[in-house]
Length: 315
Length: 322
Image 1 (cartoon, rainbow over the protein chains, first blue to last red):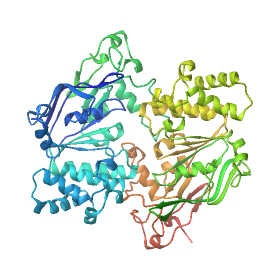
Image 2: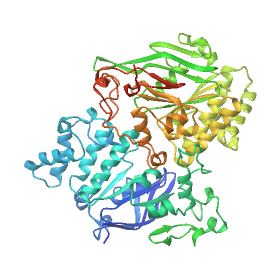
Image 3: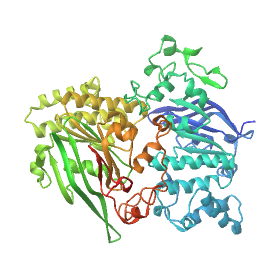
Image 4: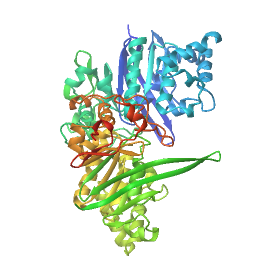
């Protein structure tokens, strides 16, 4: 059975200037120990999706439809009290900006302990748990008594990861965990996430704009555009057998060091989600767009085992 | 060789006061480099390496604490602002954040017309016409639609085009591009780079391209300089830097590129920890606490920038033969 099942999820933001469809009909399954990368550019709905899984979509956003099943229980139907218990202990989140997730005025150990006590840990044990998990993410013990501003970006991200894994959650959602960090540190943090996945068997949803990172690290890759899933496949299958024109365009936009040829670019701009284009959401930027694409939204079709694509070209 | 911009032994200190305590940060430490006419010089480094500061010094938006700055053969280190103004036509900056680059209450058109009126004795009509042409040139078409819009009414990619249009409107000869695409999505990024390269060719500009992305530089730069904690660690022609990096830090930068680092088939180097505090850099070689090859000498003595062969230098004891 899947650890997490998402069924036909729709999220909209009700803003003054119109209704923004941020996530449109997203469904997927996440196995135990799987790393799923959700890849998309800004406005693709990937971050909103991450928040929706924890029922944390901020106002004026609203989950209008769908189910998020964690071990068969719909997270979206839980009371605020019940969901608070689940956050951190069964589903936890690592954010892009480690500079804002920690309270600047309190020592790491105090914040960490408070979080553990809230989830019913014994005060006598909490300190040793803090120590254990900071060590697990490669931080020295003295970090416990530091304030966030005394830590570097990478160290802060390690602290948030330590807190995210401390209650041994089934699913960790990491939203651009390395984007705010320098390249060399990015690699260190991704290595740490890999290590945690191996050691604790957690399922991980890695939300990222970087297709290269996804193809290097994840087991499965889901490509989103304008709130819709464009393509979903096993990493190897995707690398060898990319189907959707948007996935291909993203791949071709990666700089290839060896060829010394400037990567291809995609014409046009992302859609305005207050008035998205009719038909396939990608058609205005797609070089293969036909009349059908302008009129009819493509369904998800299975083109190979576990390889899904939403594109009229493959029907 | 024809040099457009040259920094000679440039040092830049910033002083900050935190709770009344003075703290000195050396953002650039004895860096020399030159941008040759017609070339793209790529400057790569992590945050805190001093790369943006070097860019700003080279067009004298900052005055260095020590060292000399040349534009062509002219020493502009001490040039007063009144004289620098004439040079601003020839040297322009394209900053990273396009939203900070254009006054949010100005329209795009006003932002383009303004420098023309300041620098050239043009009539308003002539300036407006040139501004329209500049917008079309950067692909903001039709220009009438963009001329009256304000920055927040444009997408990131469109606004960066407008910023480029403004930087180019005085037909400068030397451009400092400071991470011009790092805030943009992958599918937009390449088209902005292409635009910069096309304009550079059309107007025969020289370019100092500043970025943290060595993969991107490998595609566009003629030469690459690698910065670490305010110092130049390695410099050389792009081909050589990418295919045969010498400095452990350059190797680590190339090893960290997801997916593509394997294509190069290089020796992988992993660094511990993070870039240090520029106000209190490590003794000896600044990389030594993180470097897997660090020897005793690296902990106490700073290596010189060693010329290994023509046009290729590296600041590392591993390459020092006395």
